Length: 282
Image 1 (cartoon, rainbow, N blue to C red):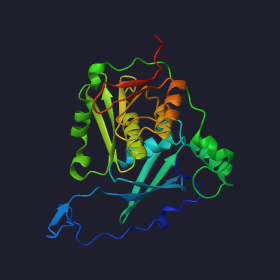
Image 2: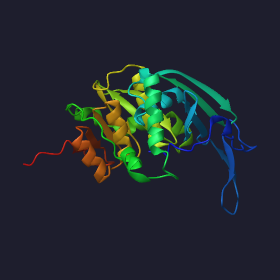
Image 3: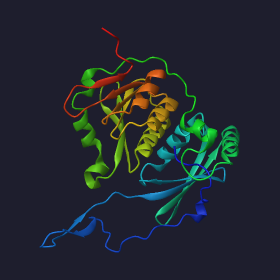
Image 4: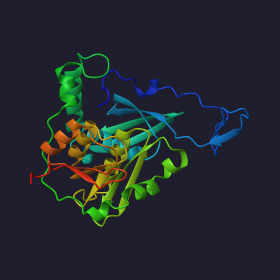
């Protein structure tokens, strides 16, 4: 989880310099060969997003500048700042060059809880895990989900290829992760992309919640390494099944099993591997 204390206010965010040769078709480059051929390539966009709740600066994230309202909803829920997206009343996005300020209006209940969390962490300094309260943030008490059936194997067939086809930004520039939702009929319903793997899942969760889709009728897919933070986000959102294109960590599997989250790894050249629920002994 990103450090959430001592972040600059939105007005202090400075836009990075942009290259003069940035064009619609991409950035020029010279190949490191004797001929030094010149080419151009599109690159993934990246901005600093400063988030403030009811005027209180809370976090600065580096994100891709697409689907930002989905991101704010999903990030707020996944970080535990709100219990429901209904706690968010309004989001105002204000560009500052290549940076963006997000002013988020939340309910009094959510704002009080956020201030209480900041008070508990006020004694911590720096980034990373520091103190018992920070450890509570990294290893929180999360709800155990109701048991849910695994998706049909047919819905995972050819999924890697279908995911690649759905990633519009990745096809254009590369350098981004994706999180997708496959519905009960096995079709990709939503795809969200970002330079950050956590951000991509936040955007997907935000979109799912805002569109009031039934999360039990399908599963989420992440293209990145399946770390514990992604499990936290899935549990807080109530996602019953998470499919990862990269292998999970041991702690991730442990948490998924303890919290009834279906966790499936989709290897490149072998059958899907169900890590959670744990296989029954034969």
